[in-house]
Amino acid sequence: MRQPNGTTEMASGSEERGPAHFDVIVLGAGINGSAIARDAAMRGLTVLLIEKDDVSNATSAWNSRMIHGGIRYLEHYEFDLVRESLREREWLLHAAPHLVKPLPFMMPFLRRNKRGPLLLRAGMLAYDVLSYDKSLPHHRLYSRSGALARVPGLDPAQLRGAALFYDAQVDFAERLSVENVLSAREHGAQVLTHTRATRLVVEDRRVAGVEYTDLLSGASSFAQATVTVNATGPWADELLEGLPAHDRPLIGGTKGTHLVVDPFPGAPQGCAMYYEAASDGRPVLVIPWRGRYLIGSTDIRYQGDAGEAMADQGEIEYILSETNLLMPSAGLTRESVRFVYTGVRPLPFDPDDDPARITRHHIVHDHAPALEGLVTIVGGKLTTFRSLGQEAVDRVVKKLGAGKRRCLTRKEALPGGRTADYAAFAASFKASIELGERVGDRLLSLYGVRAPQIVALARGEKGLERVFDERSGALAAELVYGLRVESARTLTDVIMRRTMLGLDPDLPIGSVEAAAAIMAKHEGWESGRAAKEIDAYVGYAARFRLR
Image 1 (tube, rainbow, N blue to C red):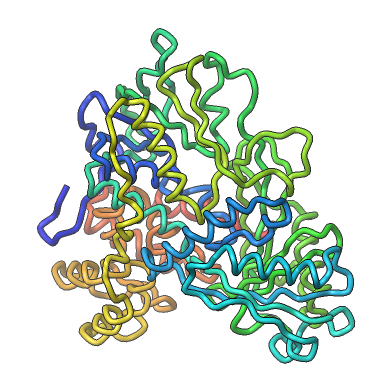
Image 2: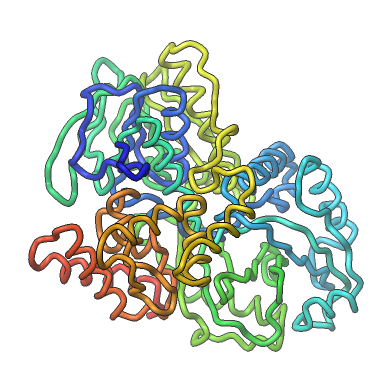
């Protein structure tokens, strides 16, 4: 729905139900589901996107926040996956320049490595060859002394040399999904968040539609579709339970835990570290992130509700000890951890293989002929969401018999990146506003070329121009914008996945209370709702603190 200021209002909950029949219903608004909805809508299909929680609420948020080619996949000869990832990385650097930034990585050559320097250098060369069309620099090699000059905290007794290569980082991975959903809505898709698909309706061995319930209002409804796409990630098998021909699991989830710590002695400056763990040879990352360091991750088989996955003591000790081995002066302990999160990777089910060896290729699984009208997405990487969406919608279009409908997603940037010269736009924006450089930088980092919409809202509605969180410089207008434009429905949605304030372990409760009061006033929340929203947020945020 177009608004007078040119923004796009997104359907939320039961406010908009649309036609009874859709070409495609997409279940799950993580990065894959949102990308599929965007692609399908851009091809002119009628689309309904249903999400049981919020956009990017689970796996799509709790990752390493990297946009990368997957250099370690070369070890398993997945050259096509590396090439696809590198191509999509390059697209994202241009399609979402406000969110995705180049990041250099230092790979130390250690005496204890299972893989010797020659093999690692060969991997670097292959990485450069496979990214022949990239805008990022080629790798360079460092001697032992050169590596120590770059990262003095490395253990000199173990160090033989190093290589520096480039990938990219997305500080706010959640907002990639938000922007995909925004784009899908612009092209006509309907979006229902906090809405659970309670049943896939099967008629004559065909999925004919979806019954669903709005979890906030309690209202239930039904929508028909010619094709339904199950993009629920770790919950895919749960949704399929009891359906014809679902006689084996499709998902074999593994959990990955990341720790967030303050700057520590010997920490890398201006680059990330990518190194081989001493205990098991797995890759471990130390990544500069928002003034702190993100360290991880683990890769452990997981059974159970992905929404309840938590870090265990063994994972925490593993990450801390491996980091201390690499940089002995770090001295990291459990008390160093400011924030911890765990996500479940929806990898293909393989009961026998080592989790690290399970392919990271995605699979578009068509349930036909046993069950028509249903496609399930298995796996998928944050980096390759666009190409996964293209492959999935190609399959949907074929099943619809809709003729040739060309994919358009590669030619169009995400909403916050729609400018020919982002650097020029950013400079002009910061020069034109009177809110200060800190606020300007913040708005650009979240909204890109949509930042002026926040400023317009702040100027147009009394009380929305004030900064309600002094640490971040967040404006009251951002809260209202998250609800009115970006599909958020709760305080937790806005704090965690729109303003991104919830990723700051120092976020004061006073700012949360101020945010709730602003939202209640400007959105007309009934008496008592603000207190309930605050309690819900505090309960949610507690999961990221070590017990």
